[in-house]
Length: 143
View 1 (cartoon, rainbow, N blue to C red):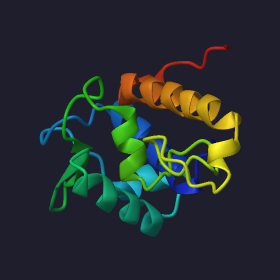
View 2 (cartoon, one colour):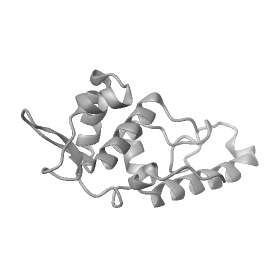
View 3 (cartoon, one colour):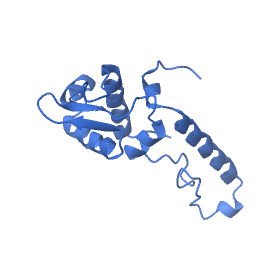
View 4 (cartoon, rainbow, N blue to C red):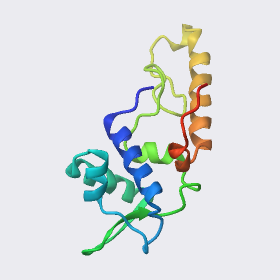
């Protein structure tokens, strides 16, 4: 699975919000500042945050001192929901059409790989479903 630029930028921007402590209307951060700090186009971030807001992941405060904040604590936001909100196709393999394991290949009846591919998709789904947004700011670990 390869994340899109939208997803990568969205996760970076959300990590920036987490580290800024922007988790309520009393502590917000403007997209302009995030864009500058993360070196991401403001227009692009506005599009991403519109999607995240629709999904209930972030919210905003208008005005001169307005900005964005996480709708819930980062420890409560499921990473899979964030990725889906950012438009990420979570299907790991081309012949497994979606995250539910639906097969779109015409050879699936005779293909021994399908059950294995569906199991791998299931493992990915479970892992992303167990991870929380706060996990994106933890130091990388080797596996």
